[in-house]
Length: 281
Ligand code: PAF
Image (cartoon, rainbow, N blue to C red; front, side, top):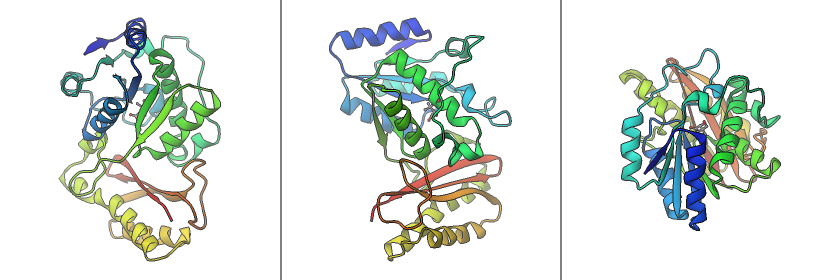
Protein backbone atom coordinates (compact mmCIF):
# COMPACT_ATOMS: atom_id res chain seq x y z
CA UNK A 1 0.00 0.00 0.00
CA UNK A 2 1.38 3.38 -1.02
CA UNK A 3 0.91 5.84 1.85
CA UNK A 4 0.68 9.49 0.76
CA UNK A 5 0.55 12.48 3.09
CA UNK A 6 0.83 15.27 0.50
CA UNK A 7 -1.51 16.21 -2.34
CA UNK A 8 1.21 15.91 -5.04
CA UNK A 9 2.11 12.40 -3.81
CA UNK A 10 -1.54 11.32 -3.83
CA UNK A 11 -2.17 12.85 -7.26
CA UNK A 12 0.90 11.07 -8.67
CA UNK A 13 -0.07 7.69 -7.20
CA UNK A 14 -3.65 7.98 -8.48
CA UNK A 15 -2.56 9.20 -11.92
CA UNK A 16 -0.16 6.27 -12.12
CA UNK A 17 -2.98 3.81 -11.34
CA UNK A 18 -5.26 5.41 -13.94
CA UNK A 19 -2.43 5.49 -16.52
CA UNK A 20 -2.12 1.73 -16.08
CA UNK A 21 -5.77 1.48 -17.13
CA UNK A 22 -7.10 0.89 -13.65
CA UNK A 23 -10.58 2.01 -12.65
CA UNK A 24 -9.96 3.79 -9.37
CA UNK A 25 -12.34 3.61 -6.40
CA UNK A 26 -12.21 6.01 -3.44
CA UNK A 27 -13.38 5.34 0.11
CA UNK A 28 -13.29 8.64 2.03
CA UNK A 29 -13.07 8.14 5.81
CA UNK A 30 -12.12 9.94 9.00
CA UNK A 31 -10.27 6.85 10.26
CA UNK A 32 -10.97 4.85 13.45
CA UNK A 33 -11.98 2.19 10.99
CA UNK A 34 -14.57 -0.47 11.81
CA UNK A 35 -16.36 -3.20 9.86
CA UNK A 36 -18.62 -0.57 8.28
CA UNK A 37 -15.62 1.14 6.66
CA UNK A 38 -14.11 -2.21 5.70
CA UNK A 39 -17.37 -3.15 3.95
CA UNK A 40 -16.92 0.00 1.81
CA UNK A 41 -13.35 -1.03 1.02
CA UNK A 42 -14.54 -4.51 0.06
CA UNK A 43 -17.24 -3.06 -2.20
CA UNK A 44 -14.61 -0.83 -3.81
CA UNK A 45 -12.29 -3.82 -4.30
CA UNK A 46 -15.13 -5.75 -5.94
CA UNK A 47 -16.16 -2.92 -8.29
CA UNK A 48 -12.83 -1.23 -9.11
CA UNK A 49 -9.31 -2.30 -10.15
CA UNK A 50 -7.48 -0.09 -7.65
CA UNK A 51 -8.68 1.33 -4.34
CA UNK A 52 -7.67 4.55 -2.61
CA UNK A 53 -8.76 5.25 0.97
CA UNK A 54 -8.49 8.67 2.58
CA UNK A 55 -8.17 9.16 6.32
CA UNK A 56 -8.68 12.75 7.37
CA UNK A 57 -10.48 14.03 10.45
CA UNK A 58 -11.99 17.01 8.68
CA UNK A 59 -12.12 19.98 11.08
CA UNK A 60 -14.57 22.01 9.00
CA UNK A 61 -17.40 19.52 9.47
CA UNK A 62 -17.27 19.76 13.29
CA UNK A 63 -19.13 22.50 15.16
CA UNK A 64 -17.28 24.56 17.81
CA UNK A 65 -18.80 22.49 20.66
CA UNK A 66 -18.40 19.12 18.93
CA UNK A 67 -15.87 16.31 19.35
CA UNK A 68 -13.08 17.31 16.92
CA UNK A 69 -10.37 17.14 19.61
CA UNK A 70 -11.52 13.79 21.03
CA UNK A 71 -12.46 12.09 17.75
CA UNK A 72 -10.60 8.72 17.79
CA UNK A 73 -7.34 8.76 15.82
CA UNK A 74 -5.70 5.35 15.27
CA UNK A 75 -3.62 5.70 12.13
CA UNK A 76 -1.24 2.76 12.74
CA UNK A 77 -4.10 0.36 13.42
CA UNK A 78 -6.06 1.73 10.46
CA UNK A 79 -3.03 1.22 8.17
CA UNK A 80 -2.73 -2.41 9.24
CA UNK A 81 -6.43 -3.01 8.55
CA UNK A 82 -6.23 -1.39 5.11
CA UNK A 83 -3.07 -3.35 4.23
CA UNK A 84 -4.98 -6.50 5.18
CA UNK A 85 -7.79 -5.54 2.77
CA UNK A 86 -5.34 -5.06 -0.10
CA UNK A 87 -5.87 -1.28 -0.45
CA UNK A 88 -3.54 0.26 -3.05
CA UNK A 89 -3.28 3.89 -1.94
CA UNK A 90 -3.80 5.53 1.46
CA UNK A 91 -4.07 9.32 1.52
CA UNK A 92 -3.67 10.58 5.09
CA UNK A 93 -2.80 14.28 4.91
CA UNK A 94 -2.23 16.64 7.83
CA UNK A 95 -4.75 19.47 8.31
CA UNK A 96 -2.46 22.16 6.77
CA UNK A 97 -2.20 20.13 3.57
CA UNK A 98 -5.96 20.18 3.02
CA UNK A 99 -6.60 23.62 4.50
CA UNK A 100 -3.59 25.90 4.01
CA UNK A 101 -4.00 29.21 5.84
CA UNK A 102 -6.03 31.82 4.00
CA UNK A 103 -8.51 29.52 2.22
CA UNK A 104 -11.87 31.23 1.71
CA UNK A 105 -13.64 28.92 -0.75
CA UNK A 106 -16.43 26.54 0.25
CA UNK A 107 -18.68 24.07 -1.50
CA UNK A 108 -22.26 24.36 -0.24
CA UNK A 109 -25.29 22.40 -1.40
CA UNK A 110 -27.94 24.96 -0.49
CA UNK A 111 -31.17 23.78 1.10
CA UNK A 112 -30.26 20.10 1.48
CA UNK A 113 -27.40 21.04 3.79
CA UNK A 114 -29.83 22.49 6.32
CA UNK A 115 -31.95 19.36 6.65
CA UNK A 116 -31.74 16.44 9.11
CA UNK A 117 -28.19 16.47 10.54
CA UNK A 118 -27.57 19.80 8.84
CA UNK A 119 -30.30 21.39 10.96
CA UNK A 120 -28.82 20.10 14.21
CA UNK A 121 -25.21 20.64 13.11
CA UNK A 122 -25.04 24.02 11.34
CA UNK A 123 -22.16 24.12 8.85
CA UNK A 124 -21.59 20.36 9.02
CA UNK A 125 -22.51 19.56 5.43
CA UNK A 126 -20.64 22.59 4.07
CA UNK A 127 -17.53 21.04 5.65
CA UNK A 128 -18.37 17.61 4.23
CA UNK A 129 -18.99 18.81 0.67
CA UNK A 130 -15.90 21.02 0.71
CA UNK A 131 -13.59 18.19 1.77
CA UNK A 132 -15.23 15.61 -0.48
CA UNK A 133 -14.95 17.97 -3.47
CA UNK A 134 -11.25 18.46 -2.66
CA UNK A 135 -10.74 14.69 -2.41
CA UNK A 136 -12.53 14.13 -5.72
CA UNK A 137 -10.24 16.69 -7.39
CA UNK A 138 -7.10 15.15 -5.90
CA UNK A 139 -7.89 11.45 -6.33
CA UNK A 140 -10.14 11.70 -9.42
CA UNK A 141 -11.91 8.40 -8.67
CA UNK A 142 -14.30 6.75 -11.11
CA UNK A 143 -16.45 5.65 -8.15
CA UNK A 144 -16.66 6.76 -4.52
CA UNK A 145 -18.15 4.63 -1.75
CA UNK A 146 -20.10 5.99 1.24
CA UNK A 147 -22.04 4.34 4.04
CA UNK A 148 -25.85 4.45 3.90
CA UNK A 149 -25.78 5.07 7.67
CA UNK A 150 -25.03 8.70 6.77
CA UNK A 151 -28.09 8.85 4.50
CA UNK A 152 -28.34 12.66 4.53
CA UNK A 153 -24.63 12.90 3.68
CA UNK A 154 -25.21 10.58 0.71
CA UNK A 155 -28.09 12.79 -0.53
CA UNK A 156 -26.00 15.96 -0.18
CA UNK A 157 -22.98 14.44 -1.95
CA UNK A 158 -25.10 13.03 -4.79
CA UNK A 159 -26.57 16.49 -5.31
CA UNK A 160 -23.11 18.12 -5.29
CA UNK A 161 -21.88 15.60 -7.88
CA UNK A 162 -24.90 16.30 -10.07
CA UNK A 163 -24.75 20.10 -9.75
CA UNK A 164 -20.97 20.43 -10.18
CA UNK A 165 -20.68 17.78 -12.93
CA UNK A 166 -18.20 15.57 -11.13
CA UNK A 167 -17.50 12.47 -13.25
CA UNK A 168 -17.76 10.29 -10.14
CA UNK A 169 -20.26 7.51 -9.56
CA UNK A 170 -21.56 7.51 -5.98
CA UNK A 171 -22.23 4.12 -4.40
CA UNK A 172 -24.03 3.91 -1.04
CA UNK A 173 -23.28 0.67 0.82
CA UNK A 174 -25.63 -0.99 3.36
CA UNK A 175 -25.41 -0.18 7.07
CA UNK A 176 -23.25 -2.65 8.98
CA UNK A 177 -24.58 -3.50 12.44
CA UNK A 178 -23.29 -5.05 15.65
CA UNK A 179 -24.83 -8.42 16.56
CA UNK A 180 -27.55 -6.66 18.63
CA UNK A 181 -28.46 -4.27 15.82
CA UNK A 182 -26.56 -1.11 16.81
CA UNK A 183 -25.30 0.58 13.65
CA UNK A 184 -21.49 0.60 13.57
CA UNK A 185 -19.95 4.03 14.11
CA UNK A 186 -16.56 5.31 15.20
CA UNK A 187 -18.46 7.27 17.86
CA UNK A 188 -19.76 4.04 19.50
CA UNK A 189 -16.34 3.95 21.17
CA UNK A 190 -17.46 6.90 23.35
CA UNK A 191 -20.29 4.90 24.94
CA UNK A 192 -19.92 3.46 28.43
CA UNK A 193 -21.64 0.16 29.32
CA UNK A 194 -24.98 1.70 30.28
CA UNK A 195 -25.01 4.03 27.30
CA UNK A 196 -24.15 1.16 24.95
CA UNK A 197 -27.32 -0.60 26.17
CA UNK A 198 -29.47 2.54 25.86
CA UNK A 199 -28.17 3.22 22.34
CA UNK A 200 -30.28 0.32 21.07
CA UNK A 201 -33.35 2.56 21.33
CA UNK A 202 -32.45 4.10 17.96
CA UNK A 203 -32.68 0.70 16.30
CA UNK A 204 -35.85 -0.22 18.24
CA UNK A 205 -37.58 3.00 17.15
CA UNK A 206 -36.80 2.22 13.51
CA UNK A 207 -38.03 -1.35 13.93
CA UNK A 208 -41.27 -0.04 15.44
CA UNK A 209 -41.77 2.20 12.40
CA UNK A 210 -41.04 -0.74 10.10
CA UNK A 211 -43.50 -3.01 11.93
CA UNK A 212 -46.28 -0.42 11.64
CA UNK A 213 -45.44 0.02 7.96
CA UNK A 214 -45.46 -3.76 7.39
CA UNK A 215 -48.85 -3.88 9.10
CA UNK A 216 -50.18 -1.46 6.47
CA UNK A 217 -49.77 1.97 8.08
CA UNK A 218 -48.77 4.59 5.47
CA UNK A 219 -49.25 7.85 7.41
CA UNK A 220 -45.80 9.20 8.33
CA UNK A 221 -47.19 10.99 11.42
CA UNK A 222 -48.44 7.66 12.83
CA UNK A 223 -45.06 5.99 12.35
CA UNK A 224 -43.28 8.97 13.91
CA UNK A 225 -45.51 9.01 16.97
CA UNK A 226 -45.09 5.24 17.44
CA UNK A 227 -41.30 5.65 17.21
CA UNK A 228 -41.36 8.53 19.69
CA UNK A 229 -43.19 6.32 22.16
CA UNK A 230 -40.29 3.90 21.97
CA UNK A 231 -37.98 6.78 22.88
CA UNK A 232 -40.27 7.69 25.80
CA UNK A 233 -39.30 4.31 27.30
CA UNK A 234 -35.63 5.37 27.34
CA UNK A 235 -35.82 8.87 28.89
CA UNK A 236 -32.05 9.20 29.31
CA UNK A 237 -31.62 9.21 25.54
CA UNK A 238 -32.45 12.62 24.05
CA UNK A 239 -34.08 12.43 20.65
CA UNK A 240 -32.69 14.94 18.15
CA UNK A 241 -34.96 14.03 15.23
CA UNK A 242 -37.05 11.16 13.95
CA UNK A 243 -38.06 12.03 10.39
CA UNK A 244 -39.65 10.35 7.42
CA UNK A 245 -38.38 11.98 4.23
CA UNK A 246 -37.76 11.66 0.53
CA UNK A 247 -34.25 10.08 0.29
CA UNK A 248 -33.12 12.55 -2.42
CA UNK A 249 -34.62 15.88 -1.33
CA UNK A 250 -34.76 15.06 2.41
CA UNK A 251 -38.17 16.77 2.47
CA UNK A 252 -40.73 15.27 4.88
CA UNK A 253 -43.36 13.02 3.33
CA UNK A 254 -46.90 12.73 4.67
CA UNK A 255 -47.84 9.37 3.15
CA UNK A 256 -45.40 6.64 2.22
CA UNK A 257 -46.10 5.81 -1.39
CA UNK A 258 -42.59 5.40 -2.76
CA UNK A 259 -39.06 4.70 -1.54
CA UNK A 260 -38.82 6.62 1.73
CA UNK A 261 -36.05 7.28 4.24
CA UNK A 262 -36.79 6.90 7.95
CA UNK A 263 -33.97 8.63 9.82
CA UNK A 264 -33.23 9.07 13.49
CA UNK A 265 -30.61 10.94 15.51
CA UNK A 266 -30.30 10.99 19.28
CA UNK A 267 -27.91 11.90 22.07
CA UNK A 268 -26.87 8.97 24.24
CA UNK A 269 -25.10 10.84 27.04
CA UNK A 270 -22.77 13.23 25.19
CA UNK A 271 -22.63 11.02 22.10
CA UNK A 272 -24.76 11.84 19.08
CA UNK A 273 -25.72 8.72 17.13
CA UNK A 274 -27.67 8.34 13.89
CA UNK A 275 -29.38 5.45 12.15
CA UNK A 276 -31.95 4.94 9.42
CA UNK A 277 -33.83 2.50 7.24
CA UNK A 278 -35.46 2.68 3.83
CA UNK A 279 -39.09 1.70 3.32
CA UNK A 280 -40.10 0.43 -0.11
CA UNK A 281 -43.88 0.13 -0.55
O1 PAF B 1 -18.47 10.02 6.46
C1 PAF B 1 -17.36 10.44 6.84
O2 PAF B 1 -16.55 9.76 7.48
C2 PAF B 1 -16.99 11.89 6.51
O3 PAF B 1 -18.10 12.74 6.59
C3 PAF B 1 -16.29 12.02 5.14
C4 PAF B 1 -17.22 11.62 4.02
C5 PAF B 1 -15.05 11.14 5.12
C6 PAF B 1 -15.87 13.47 4.91
O4 PAF B 1 -14.99 13.91 5.89
